[in-house]
Image (cartoon, rainbow, N blue to C red; front, side):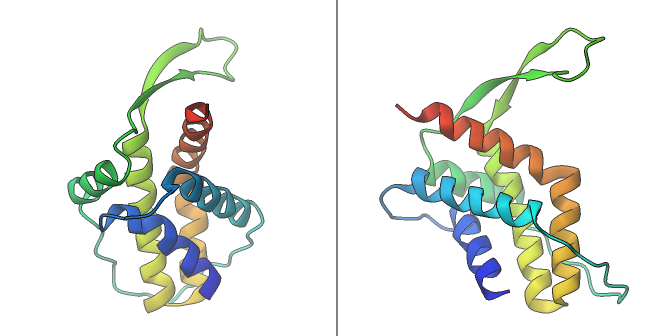
Length: 150
């Protein structure tokens, strides 16, 4: 669990404080890859215990920190309706800053649960948030980071 929390904090730091380090993009890309590997190999069990609800981070504050830490991030194009052959694909706009902001907010909730409830609760929420929300942001962001490479 400690290594999982460390990985989460490596990512969430970009949304909570200005980070002064070199190679932030390389570091972020590695952390996101490690997070995705953990997710696809995870088995989680639902914890039936009732816990208090987590206080979610403020979107605007996290976004502002992400923007300071990654000033080169911006909008990108992606294709919608990619797998629906009966629909024509459309080019839509994504936002790398929003992708990372949403990931940080979700991961902060997972970290809080791991630290304040139970391992099963934290892992189940991580798995659920990835399935319903975060996985798309993570994959879009990894694709964006790849496109930034020279």
